[in-house]
Image (spheres, rainbow, N blue to C red):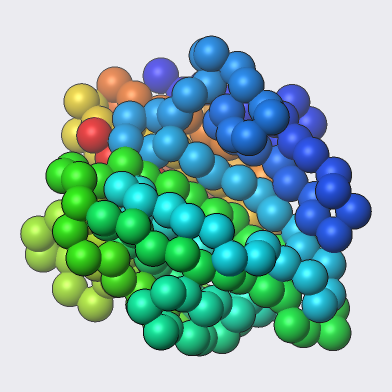
Length: 232
């Protein structure tokens, strides 16, 4: 089963400095039919104006993955971590027992990103933060695991969830596949480009919610950049 969730039909908000679209219920957007997909709880498509951002605020018991699509984000937290993560890189914050952080776009242009929240398997634990570049060339024609709590995913940023976040770039006309346990949940979003997933058309920044599928067969209708979450 593949359900297309069109970008135009997503919830959203425009705060001037922040333009956001929400694939799932978040903040003032509430849809009881879209409270998450497996352990995936939040997928926000954010555009942040230059020299603005999110002031210090708390989180706990959530794995927060930030996929930078354009520009860069600068992170500061109550653990003393500071870092700038730019397009082509990913950052992960395990909120654990509690952490405060701020995220700012200190760049001269806009920053566009996906912020993905995944529910952890256990509550509590020491919070942590990390970031890593994943060059798009290394993801050409295949999925690369960006963040994972599953065994064997060496080289990925660690999260405390039975889930993985993957990225791929696919050229127009190219087809790639992803093997999926039918009992698990997959959520796929093209950051750019249009694709077909098991014959279902998915446009740029649409969501494709999949379950009870043993394979995702993805054909790029135009050059595409893909982000996929596979979770219980």
